Structures are given as C-alpha cells and as structure tokens.
Image 1 (cartoon, helix red, strand yellow):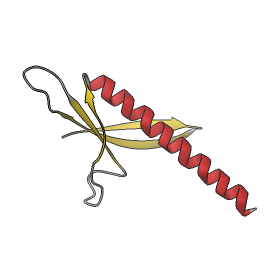
Image 2 (image 1 turned 120 degrees about the vertical axis):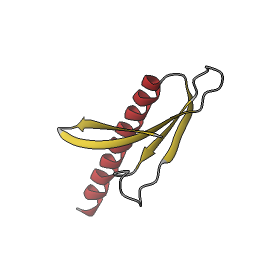
Image 3 (image 1 turned 30 degrees about the vertical axis):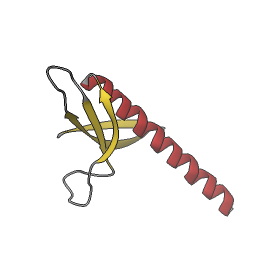
Image 4 (image 1 turned 135 degrees about the vertical axis):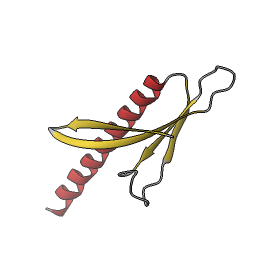
Length: 88
C-alpha cells in the first residue's frame, strides 16, 4: 500500500491527512482502492479504513480522498460548534 500524506487548510488551520492507495488492476486495467487513516499510519493503532474502490487513476482517487476528508473535518467542526452553542 502506498501511503500519501496531504495537508488541508480549512479556516486558516492546517490538518494533516493520510490516504492509502492500492492498485488491484488486472491485465492493464487500473482499479485503485482508496483507504484513509484516522491518524499517523506509523502508529500501530491507526489502521487503514476502506473508503472507496474502482478509481481509474491515482489522481482521481487522491482528489476524491482530499474532498472526502475536507467534508469530514468541516462536518466535525460544525457539530462541535452546535454542541458548544447548546451548552451555553
């Protein structure tokens, strides 16, 4: 598995994300499987989680992973803000 690290900047805050990419193509047909890590993949407790399969290029898979993680972080920040409003 190829591990890819990217940095997303959301609202001026930098977030590091890690994606895993595997090509399980057959007879010249690319079929990339995309995984994500909840934290640093060098730590033994962070295992890859399957995200989506069937990508025809690495760039397509990486772009999908970046957009997915960006939306995930934005949703988490939104929920955190909603909880903080509810506690006031």
